[in-house]
Length: 584
Picture: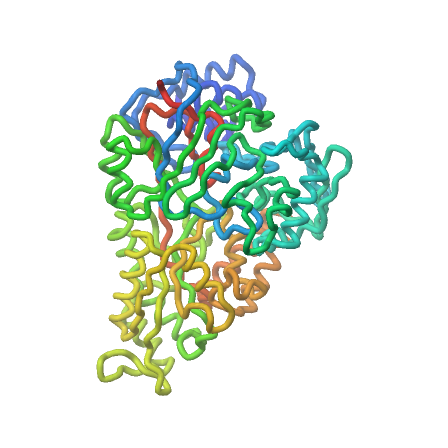
C-alpha cells in the first residue's frame, strides 16, 4: 500500500496530509488529529499511518515541498520547555504593526493571531475564532469569538474589539484594497459579522495574512495610530499571539518573549494549544546571503529562512540539518514609473526591455535553478496560473532591438539609445540584499546589450520603500521589487490597479484591461469566474507590462535537528511557533 492507495480510498486531502507526514512536516500526533478532523475513524487512521510511516530521508509533499534530513525525527520525544530559538532571516525587519507596516515578517506569526488560517492541506481552519461559517448566498461571514480573550496588555479582545480593528484597517490601511468586496464588519454578541458587497470566492484570503492579524486597537490608537511618530510596532506592540514584542532593532534583530497568560489557540493542527514551549525567539537579520548557511552550520542560529541558493545542496548533505523546500508565492519584478513618460510611457519600449531579459539564465545563475522564470505576473505554481503568458516576454535580443527601434530609440555615439534628444539612461533602485542586488546587476547588464543604461542605486530597505512610494517623478524611475504573498492575484491587484497609484502601484500605470480584470476577480463568486478573471489579468499584464516580471524563487527553510515542531508549509508564508521546542 502507498500514497496512490490512500488517495483512491480516502481522497486527495487525506493523501496530501499523508505526504506532509511522510515528509516530517507534521508530527504523528498532529497527523492523527488532522485525520480525525476529516472524519477518518481510528481503524482507518491506523491503516493510513502504517501505509505512510516516514522512512525515507527525502520525500515530496502534496504541495510540492521537499524535506531532506539526515538526523533523528524524534517523533516519540516529549517537548521540552524553555530556551531561545535563534532564527536567521533573509531581509531587514519591518515594524510590527499590521495596519501601517509595508511588509510583514515571521514575528507577526508569533505576536498575533489571525481570525482564521490555513492548515497543512491548505484548508481554512479557525485560529483566533473558535468557528466560522458563510451564508448560502456568500454575502455574510460569521466568526465566533470565544469569551475571555485578551491581548498582551490584558485588554479585552471580544467581538466588538475585533470588528473595530477590521474597520480601522478599512479606513486607515493602504492594504485595505485587497478586501475591497467587504462592506462592513459588525459585532453581534460573541460573533463578528462580515457583510459583503458581493459574493466573492476570495473573501477569507486577506484575513489570513499578516495585515489582518488581530491587535488591541485601543493600544494602537493610544500609541499614535497612523501618526509617523507612533511607537506601536517599534517600541511596543499589543497582540493576541503566544509571544510578546520585546526588542525591534532594524538591521540587527527582533526579540519576542513567551506570553505566560496566553489563553490558548483554537487552531486544530497545533499540538500545543496552550502557552509556548519556548521562552523566546530571536530573529537575526542576515542580508548577505552567503553568510546564512555558515551561521547555521556553525551553530550561531537554530533555524534559517532563505539560504543562498548555491548553498542549499551543501546544507542538504549535512546530517545535523533538515532542509525544507516548496513552491513560494513570490516574484521579482521591475517597476517602470510612467511619469517618466520619455522612458516608459509606450508599450513598445516596455516590451523591448522585457525581451532583453534572459529569465532562464538568471534562474540558473542567481537562484541555482531553485525557482522559475515568470513571463506574466504569477509564479508558475499558482493554482490560477495561465500558461498562455509564455507567449509573451521570451528572451530574444533581436526582437528587443526591433521593438526599441520601432519605438523610435536610435543608438547614440556611445551605444546608448536616444529618442527625441533624450538619452535612455536612468537611475535604478534596489534594496540592499545580496540576491536582489545580483538580480538588479544582471538586469542592468542585459539592458546594456540593447543600448539602455540603468544606473544602480543600492539603498537599505526603508529608503527603498520611501523612494519607490513618491508621487509623480518624486518616485524612482525604475526599481526592483520582490513581492511575497500567499494569494498572488490579491497582492498583484495592488501593484497593477490604477486606484493604487502611487503606492504600491510604483509604476503609476493605468491599464484599463487590468482594472477590468481586477473588478472581475473581486466579483468572482465561483471557481470558473475566478479563473476567467485571473487569466485575463495575467494576459493583460504580460502584454501591457505595468511591471516587468522576471522570476520567482522556491521557499527554503533549514533547521537544526535539535529543533522540533518548526513546520513551514506551502500555504503560509512563515511557520507558526506554538509547537516549536528545542532539545535540552
